[in-house]
Image 1 (spheres, helix red, strand yellow):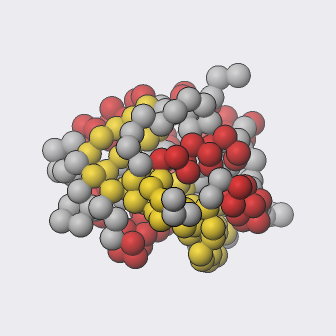
Image 2 (cartoon, rainbow, N blue to C red; image 1 turned 90 degrees about the horizontal axis):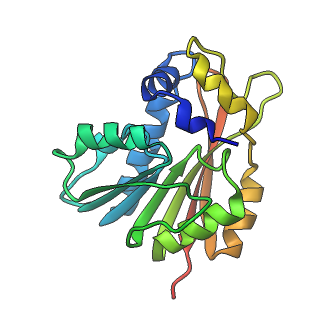
Length: 210
């Protein structure tokens, strides 16, 4: 089955998550910024980078290498057009983290927000472990289930609704368990609640040395 993310226009996705009733764009950028400030990585990979939300938060005097990864080639073209001249050390890769290798050198920090709802955990975490340097960190954002809120929020952008067929909400415990099998130990976790009523969990993992 063709991945629905390949058929969602970037303008639809960005407009959808920026709607006041959804309010996820600022949250995702803020969590990326927090991770950069907390870990001061020399290198970072953003998995599911889309159009580069949060790239303006990067301090190039601290982080000299930035890797953007997305399954949608159009998203990569847009992100490159927006940031190639303003973010030093920027490289982009079109890749599905469930299959094949990630063709870039390992980084100090991997940021993967709202990714694991759409991929196979064992395969994806195994590849992200290989993309993270020993002693490096993985920061994840998961959406929590709700009994009275749609997993995929209704909006005027109808292409987004195609995600409902492939979205599977992952519990923090399931993610932590799978992450442990590929060398990631959890260091922290916190829950965020948005105005929409949706809740998210931010977890930080450390890859084992050696």
